[in-house]
Length: 579
Ligand code: ARG
Image (cartoon, rainbow, N blue to C red; front, side, top):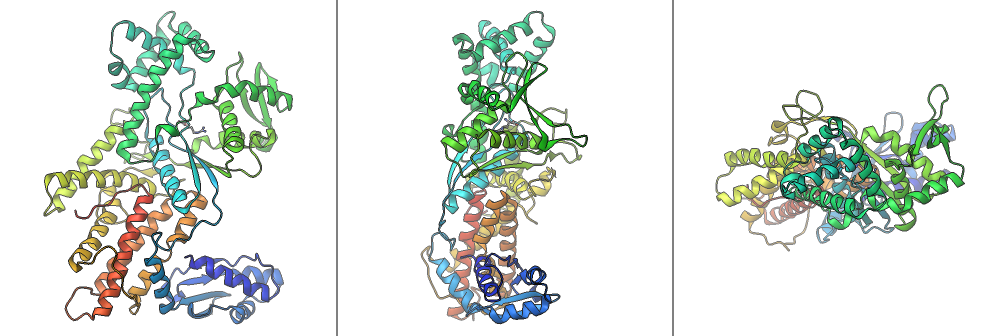
């Protein structure tokens, strides 16, 4: 069920009757104010320009042609040629009745499933996973869940960084630690950041260590068994770190989704040979470079994209070209979505350009780099520990749960200690996730414990609490899960709530189109708020409420609770029956 889609189709049919092309933009939007009805059709203005006629006149003709059937009470012209549509309550009730009996809550079946490769999380295994990867992980997972719910075939690709030159120094350091009899869990698992720092210090200061490190990189990359073994030990331990974070975060990534940089190793020589054969890559100061005129600077100098270093080493960029080949040709992706911080914008523009020219990306494969902004501390600077170090994600998430517990304890009345612990876990993790997901992806945002754990405003606790309130009403009414009654929409609040409930599919479409889960966050927040106003205006369990009215309102409540749960689940956020 997608009202916007339905109105678009009907408007376009009317356009055709007026002699306009069938794909004329109907520009249907949700009305911003109550007095503008429920939806607006804004396409008459642009269409009038096309026909060189008066927009109001065209809007009038459009209304005459528009066959809305029993869907709407009225369609009126406003301003220079907007058409305000007021939906009919009985029609809405019938739609919602149907959606109620559907396990997909009225979201239609995907008629044209696509294969979508989603590249997200992708920590660098040489170091501790940082907040940038937290954002990628959370946003990517929400988009993945939404695409899967809609019915696309999603292939997760965790493009972990396991192959840079730093690994030479790390395995040389690891070798010495192990030789000194230090247990592996202790060296690397305890603190990757410290381990990295130690190795780096030796690399900079200790005679012979840098040479050995460089030697080990070469050996590692050419398949030396000893180096490979050390590297594998390091990688496995580091993956355990990310596992811990994934598990705490309730994200859907598994080991099967790991397709790290090293997995493309065998393809790189071929890629280079091919780029040379196609005369795309040329030698420049000893390196191999693709010069991109399309991304030239103001002076007209082409943008250089280095694919092989002086001395023969491959780079992040070479691997990404191989990844394009794999995803487009082997996995047959219709769309590739990549979530990284905004600073990698140029890199992915270059990758796409080169990959298209070289034929590694089929023209049928869309390539969407979805950048996100930086997570800032409350001081407005990039989020760091008090001493300026990297914030360990596992610790951040533990802190979230501890803080949530304090908040939950204050509110909880009849929960056992175990229940409080469970609720605190869901609220704490949910709060961190929702705070991130609800912001416009591309802007920087400020990480604030107080804001994200508040029960007011668009937060996870607010939504989780709203959910428990609806559930408690349903418990008091003693209605079973399969409860069914006739829906009727009489009061304005009932109608507003119904329109919102029927906008789920529309919202999901937008989330998927632009990879923007914040739209779903806003939607759920507005839904919860509308439910609260509905509940205040429309009593359900009070004495004197007619049984038919009560049953219909219970139906609205059940649908709201199901939708809140489903919507939060798509964001990877858990709900609870009580808090
Ligand atoms: N490991 C990279 C980072 O930490 C992200 C990888 C993203 N995916 C890719 N295909 N390059 O920034």
